[in-house]
Length: 353
Image 1 (cartoon, rainbow, N blue to C red):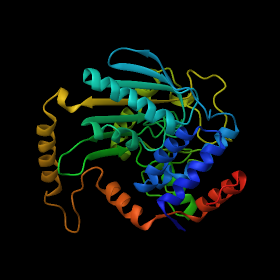
Image 2: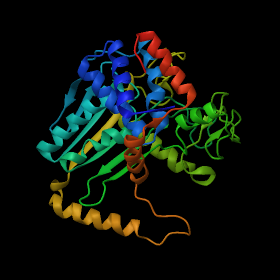
Image 3: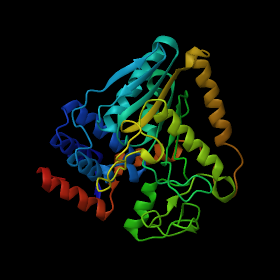
Image 4: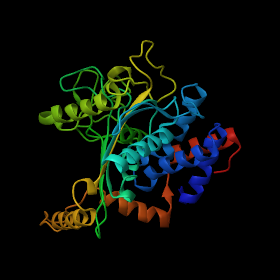
């Protein structure tokens, strides 16, 4: 079924309010969450709404958090999310980074005691309106086996970087440090489809095309495939350290699971999930207009590069931007299992979809 952005926004905002979120938090959480659906990252949008509700019902999400800075210098801070929705904690922490960058040129914020924050790209893109470069990372539930490991010790641990341009669309990289995010396996499960090779391994460590491989004791594989997975493993490790070891959040196998039916570790090493945000003022390096003119030239040069037959060289952010423009006009199509989940939430809270 296809729904307009406005329909989904009104419904989702009402669900967050029903959870007890203050109006401003409900609106912010909805905007953050639906940015994924708009940009075509369907695994991280309203499909996850039921998961947030279940975590709240299990007492693992604080609907009315007092998000605050617990430690800071002029250019750095640690933010405590007070167990709140990462969809709210993330933007608030990024704004701390933006304010520090405005004052001293750059701002770096590590976050503890948070939850799943949606797509990393949304948070990084908050910097663009201020002629700043934005960086966002988060650790996640341990579903990924490091190179040569049978144990799941890391999450998909995405990295996003947003860079402002002038006449050209902004550069927006938003990527998991695994070959594919777990949400893509969930989509394949809903469609009863196999997954491509290189996405996952089975419980014995063999490559698998079974969309249920991770559910059955296997693991997601780091970015890089059979000969280069050490690179994805390394990137995922950096995200875990910046997001959690630096802030005091849980890291590695102690990161709490997103699903409510799995309990967090009985012996946590920190508080909640961790995120990491950065903001750099472009004019701390060179005049912003000059920089953006050269970014335009960089983007144009890469986009116009000779490509293999039938293909075009894309700039990071191109597919998502084009999808957002189309979905704002044509609506957002949801799979039947997702619609059923949302209808269930509607009945629970007395909200019409």
